[in-house]
Image (cartoon, one colour):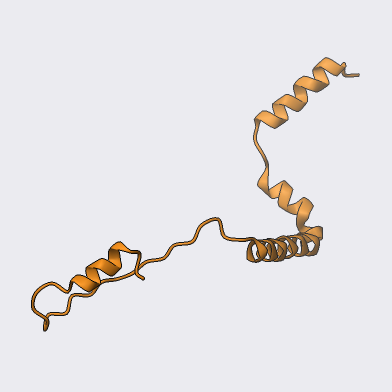
Length: 86
């Protein structure tokens, strides 16, 4: 008969050996439909959650293209950039 102390040491030795992936897969094989449904359900819930949340930030950008046919500085365009594109 094993004492609780020796049983504890045996369990620690099994844990120290690492996780046996093959044994875990053989255990989970009969339950693969449940795992698949759980993964798909989690993915679906996360998609709905992310689509219904308000964005934390919003980015706007303006691009200034230089027209080679115009000579000099078009000060109106530069003024619009300083005002935020208005």
